[in-house]
Image 1 (cartoon, helix red, strand yellow):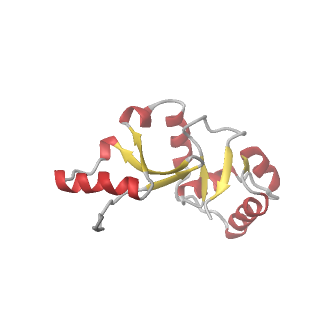
Image 2 (cartoon, rainbow, N blue to C red):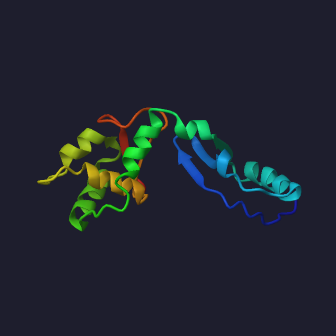
Image 3 (cartoon, helix red, strand yellow):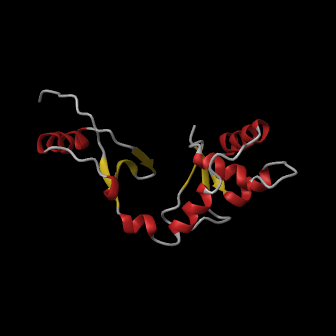
Length: 143
């Protein structure tokens, strides 16, 4: 089969069960029939499945409250030393529960606001879809 470049203009989310192309229904890009057909052919070739997120999914609790809490720390200043310590702990020890990471960071301040800001900066990841944000939420480094 001949290969034709296809502009997906998509966000790919990698989870434990594989890579997915994020399909946020309220923000779907409008494509003509030919372009949409090419996209539908390209996705399986790229080994991608759509991860459909509806407006109802985005507003559903407890996910919504967790997302709002995380984003309330967007653009918060994180001192370089603290940022490095957080990333180092996760690199050395791998994914861990939020409470364990907090206990592993020697600091005179609660590292939670900095960790939340680092989620927003796409340096850390957390699953907010399967459970509400809490002390047992699993964190991992994006690098």
